Image (tube, rainbow, N blue to C red; front, top):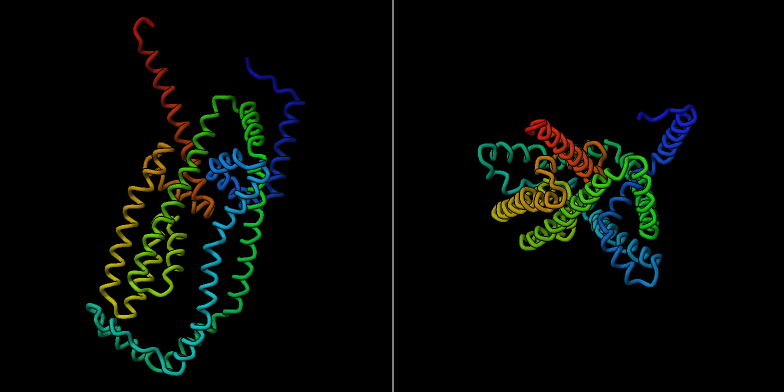
Amino acid sequence: MSPTWSPQLLARILVVAILVVLAIFTLRHMLPALGWAVVLAIATWPLRRWLAGNAASTTLAAILLTIAVGLVILGPLVVIATQATREIGLIAQWVQEARAKGLGTPDWLSHLPVIGGYAASWWHDHLGNPEGTQELLGRVQSMQPLRWTRHLGSELFSRLVILGFTLLTLLFIYRDGPRLIEQARNVADRMLGPSARPYGIEAIAAVRATVNGLVLVGLGEGALLFVAYVAAGLPHPLMLGFATGILATVPFGAPLVYSVACLILLADSRITAAIILFLFGSLIVFLADHFVRPALIGMSTRLPFIWILLGIFGGLATFGLLGLFLGPAILAVVLAIWREAAASAASGRTEELAPGR
């Protein structure tokens, strides 16, 4: 029997749709904060469940866990900002010395194959004297650094506001999570039916597995390369390690940091150390991106490796950093629907071919 579409029902659906669109439009600037809060809640929900069972109250557990998450997020950023602030004075001193004396030609430049002699000669003629260095620095200063600084300050303020609302939303999700989950389950059952529950489970498992596969593995890469930075005698190895761990959350992001570290070693004429660091970093990234990450994500979501990469990079290109976790979740649900449809079609085909039918 087909459903009866009465004018009252159609009007109600239209009003609900308009209200949903208006709500999304009203919250459009806060959607990243809401999305990050949901991702963080899904990733840390087992910890929330344990803490709520051992704390005096659910509210206290929510407050403690929100503070812990905030410290984990802000800690590395504060360390990097502090180190960068300390470097400003050294950079200013380096600029003054370069203006007065020019930039000396690095010893390793002349040892480069094929282009070594030409590169060293060009450096000496254009940067090795004060006139060439002042011309280069003059071009840099003409690029309106004040406008860059204002833009950077505006972006930083915007990100801090999003982070504040993310943590505030996370606090309420931790506190009222079980009730919100029950309400969401009831609404989904009414709209889509109980058969759609596995799709939500697949999406949650994909988000949690992606967080483990990206964040935890990225931190592991940062820790291992931090040890390598210390062994290589690089300046500020802790800051380099933090930067590596943050960028390593994106597959193939860590090479950006350890390649810069290798260039620093080359500039100091430490060619052997640069080669060893590059090979070690490449080995770590290869093992993490081709074996560890696919294993962590694939075991929980049953996503093939190619779908994991497509979900991560496609989500990153579409939704920004939040897409790192949304992309695999969306593909996990789509793949679950595909497998269910394929199994249903195969079952129907088997019944049609069964003898005696």
